[in-house]
Length: 323
Image (tube, rainbow, N blue to C red):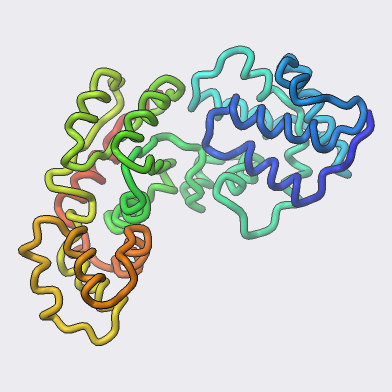
């Protein structure tokens, strides 16, 4: 075998992609095929060859390229076994996919290459070399191993729910709660169908008030430990306390007068109010993602959390794990 060694950066990128929260078959095939196509010089394979190749052979080729790019010898398979056990605890994996996970990638050598500032999944990888990864997750709050999924419509929920939860004494990252923003209520249905088929862990679905039809599509496929919450009013932004919105607007805009926001309380939609507010103040267009980040900076006390947001967090906390 003749290879072009993976650089340190390529090794880190590859392992990052292998340890993200994603269906194992999809991520392992993509990473392994990329490595073989780009770094295996002899024997040389085309993409069509790899598409037809048995998973065990594909795994052996990829791990050889990875390990030969490292200076250290493979010592033991502790991390490999723990990754295998973790993926099998979260996903329903067939025998063929498990062959991708039964590899001898030298994770211990790769861990030595990791810098301090790394994604949460790579912090989890490092923790797998410790005696108790769960306790380390609770201490360092790196989310993995994932135990529950929150499936929501948009970026506002994804950005703010973890912050509200922390203020309620429940850190999502310390308890393995992973949030997926689908990008709309119709996408939530598609995501849920896929997750319900491939996941073993609970899914908590959060929908806007106008998503009753989507709720009806999801309900028949709910498993006994899944849960849906439909907002009592409008969108997630409508759950934000008025004082929190005012505080955020003051923070974001200088010399704002209270009279500018008199219509907030009477408005039936806080998103519509904010769109008009930004428009008439001569500011940039209202963007949910940017506003959510601004709100995040201003969540400081118990009064910043509405009753329904507290209820949602209690429901998330109470979703049972099936093992």
